[in-house]
Length: 122
Image (cartoon, rainbow, N blue to C red):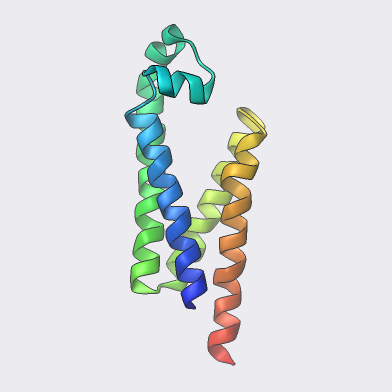
């Protein structure tokens, strides 16, 4: 993978670590409620779901950071595809803004990862 593709995978991985923190730590706090537009009652009722979702975002982060550190293009492509699908589902089921926050940056990083294979062969 090119350095640019590795940086992009790292940035998307760090973004997902941020999602992990928001969902696993801040979900039931006033800050989390403001970010996600929820009430205290809803946040408490859905805390277990947010915890689970945060963990999955942690798995995405781990995979992307692993790909960046080891320069594994195939691993980066797999996890970036997962990010894009998760972002598309989130946009469809929760809020269109998830498309711009998660799926579009993931697609840009995927493009860099795919192109890095072409550059490596040149």
